[in-house]
Image (tube, rainbow, N blue to C red; front, side):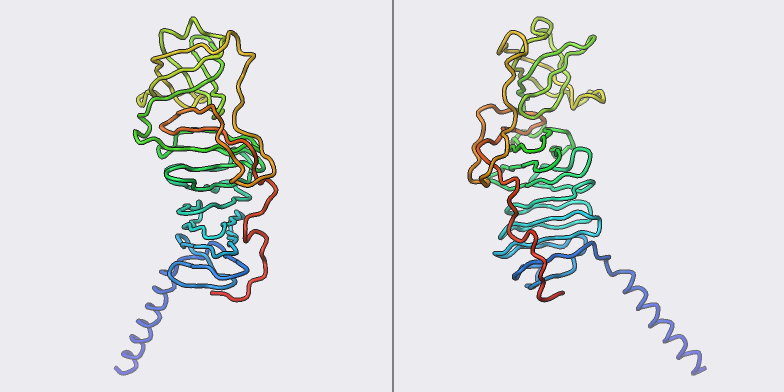
Length: 300
């Protein structure tokens, strides 16, 4: 009887250990920095293990996160974000994302990811409600809270976004060459590089011209594969006869940092998000604080 009791106790202990082992979350990567940083509620120096949902607040030297998936994140000084296996939720400051295939950055209500192959880019929270995005190598896609594509950034360009209070119901305002393909009217916006389908009685007369349109997205419509959304147009303004005088989209990258950027004059509103090109410089080759630091002094 005593033997059976001891065996039962051992079994219970083993079962408890197994349950604890199963409850432990898997590690998704590591974070390193040349100085101290905050990891959830603990102050850490050097390096630490990152789990799904870990909150990191970089110190004055910044931090670098290396995920097992191959994605690399560099957080600027004082930047705060929550790291997940498939995305970074940026809460304060700015970060750089490298080897971005399949990985995303969520900033306010926007989701930024690579457009096709792996890409690198910078994302910063700027002022009240604004988000700045720069494509450094490769192209990036920006989507709103409903998953609707609101911008494509080519390599070496930068844009500033501001989600509108009305959300996706906010009026759309786009500029570009109005093209007719079969019975459909299409327009690729010069600022966001997003193609939409248009419906409205004023479009036929302006086909082939550079126009500015105002309208509302039709939430019930199922857009074709080659367009982001369908917009019912309420106003069409001709900007130029023909499409030769195409305006500039996002600003080209230069040598300055975010402080050297200026918002371009032309802006668009699409999917409830206002977007404008940034011009005047972008630190395309510059590393964020903490990027490249690889000399941890301690671990957690």
